[in-house]
Structure formats: structure tokens, C-alpha cells
Length: 280
Image (cartoon, rainbow, N blue to C red; front, top):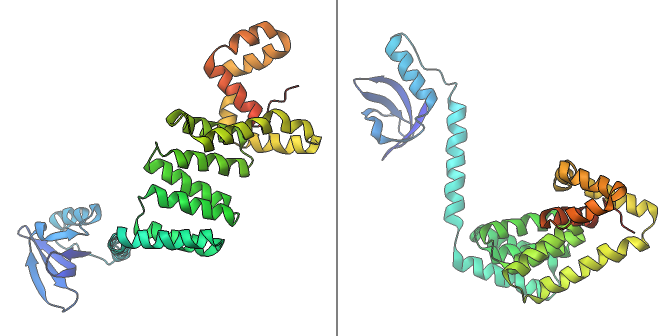
């Protein structure tokens, strides 16, 4: 079993007796006894199990089966330490400004590279994530853009620009029902935000009037895209919504009454926005 000993680095445990470990220091081959508190990593459940085996069976000998597990853990620790050491707010700002320059000059691939470098330097900076999402949209990587903007929102749920960007990305991905929610969320946080207002106006128009100009094949494609969304699937499995949908056909008065419930109305509107429920 390999461990890391405080002050000595990587070592291999030879045996355990008298409440101490006898270890072999890897870098120089020397042996010494250390106390448990001197082991700063690598003392795992597997090692504790081995200790029990040694106490019960004096002839028990360690194998190197756990070496691979240790090496993987050690490398993971090293990578994480390197990642943290790489973080630098000043250098992140430099990379962001480089990205802004490339973006203004329409060098979107270079902008992506600069923003990605900035993210590595400051992974918890929501503004940089937002900028990266914008650049990714320009190179048509909408999935990547959405991942980045969702991280930005996780970092700062009140970041209105990120909600507006999320709505824009969802429109590009033909997820109009999600775009409506994103713009509305942005307007909830800032009712005067012009980007969210305009985005909501446009996506609402697309939903209300866009289907009129679609071919039957396009409508089916849109509906299939909506049906693939887990949120839409959950709504369609809601017994209340199923009853309302039946009432639209069989008992319109009951359906209209149900639509007075804001939660029911929101779900029906989402089905319409997704193209799953056709109107008109």
C-alpha cells in the first residue's frame, strides 16, 4: 500500500505494529517508523481492512493490488493541485480582454480559445462563462454554449444577461418553450431588461404565428423535438394536464376553468410553445 508521509513524500507501508507503521520512503529507499497522524493521504478503507487482517493473521502479507488505486488517487490529487495553482484572476482578466478583442474583430475561433483560457484561470467567473457562450454560438456550437451559460447561471442565479443569453441560445436550438422561460426569468429579476423583453416578444411571435407558415413535415419535426424534452414528457404524464387536454375536446367550459389556474396555464403554454399541442 502506497501513502504520502508528511515531510517525506510517497512511501510504501511495509507493516504495522505497536501503533506505528514501518514504511519505505520511495525517493531514497530508506525505512522508518511513522505514526498514523503523519500519513496525509492514501490511508483508505482498503488499508484499514489490511490492518485488521494483520492483527488477526500475523502471517498476512500485503500485495501490490492497491498500488494502481493509489497511483490513480495520487495523480488525481496532483491534477487538482495543478488546476488550483493555475488559477489567477489577473491573468483571467487578460485572457478575457484578448477574447473581447478577437470577438470584436470577428475572430470567433480565437475568441473561444481566449475565453476558455480565462475560464481555466477563473472558473467561477460567471461573466467569462457568458462571453464564452456568446463566442461558441458564433461557431455554431450551441450545445457547448448552453453548457457554459448554465454554469454561469449556477454561479450567479441573478445574472440577468446570462438568462437573456440562455434564451437566445434556446431559440437557436429551436427550444422556444425553454426560451420563453429564460426570458421570463430574466424579466422577473429585471423587468426593464430590453434584451429579455425583445427576446420574449420575438419568441412569442414565433410560437403564435410561426406554425402557420410551417409545412406538415416541419410541424411534425418540431413536435418530435419537443417530445424529446424530459420537461415536456413530465407535463404529458401529469394526470391534471391529461384531463385538461381531454376537456378541450369534450368539455371546453371545464378546460377554460382549469386554465384559470396559473400552473395549469403555464404547462399548457409550454406544450404549445414546444409544438406538441397545436392550436388553431
